[in-house]
Image (cartoon, rainbow, N blue to C red; front, side, top):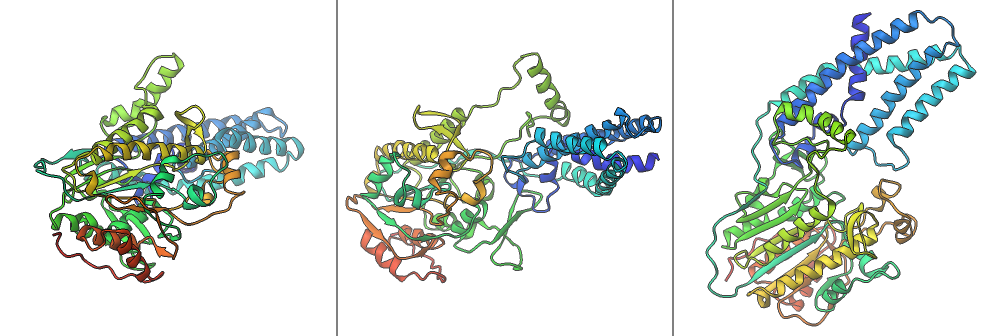
Length: 526
């Protein structure tokens, strides 16, 4: 019986464990890719958590069996302990899937999962007491089967906890001589998930985007950009490389691997073959300020300046803590909350946003950087801005985030206009993909305003691309379909001086074909 309870307890432990373990067990390692490395002390703490839960679950099951052995009456209230037990497992399963970002349906929550599971079993106990033991045995068998996964899950966590990982620098700035005079620059601002349709074609009633409107009136606007994918971690590396990417994964050391087609071999991301490697070869200095992707890791040899903000752990877990510190941090935080005591307060959304804009402004105002790329997590859902009050805080809509994106664009353009090389700077404003209504609808953070703005779930796939050349004052529009991947070639040509005005850009766009693209390497910069 102990062996049976031990395996079943293993299954229960996997359900009760923190949801973070599911990402650590993924063969793609993409969670690791998006974290500030090393995270070995966090993973070791998670492995210990699982082992402790395994022991506790096994003892709990033995206790339940001992209680049930003395309760032969099918109407005994003690039998409802099984309903509470499986309600707890269901709640922790849902909570774990939410934490692992494998579930985002806002109608589901841990409390609702507990109530639903416990209520169903209680109803069976009340209406059909003879079927109740069968239902319990069936659920226990499912948990038992899951328990066999522990024999590979726990070793995998232990191995990952001792893997060799680089020590990331979240920020670095290499010494660069100050330029003696104004010079050509390219500033590329990428607004994550900005929809051309929502910004220009079907703007939400009453939404004011004055900075985007003014930029459009002085730029070349692509009105029919064709998407290059659906996910940021695929699209941005694809634009850097000039190659289609259909899937990505990470090594255990946090290096990026990609496929250019289904069933194609996995290829290691090489920074030397990117836009930034090409810029370096031509004598351009380069810099990035961005979120989500580990730019300072995968492009550390090609960048002169870098700042990145990656996904942070919840529950006060951190790469900077020891294994013991990460093991005890959640309990310490819970105890502090119970006694209303402060414990490592997390930065507010306003502080995070301010830090992002500050770093973006620092990069684009640095005249020593010739090619600057800024990746802003705007207007990416969920909403964290209230356009009526002007406050940054969770609870807004995608439309609110669009308003904040416009405000941020205005701040950055003002800073850019005050640089010495402003009159020689080509500005590119783009997005990686459109507003992915299918992902966010019915998910956490979806609002009535989002439902209205999307026309009840309509998805327009067009991302945004706007290019403003130095001293351009007249608008121009490119209406023909252009693949987003063509941006790579466009930037290469701008860098080489082969596209320097709206007319040359329009001529280039007319050469593009929707499904084919010949990547050209530029000549050295004059």
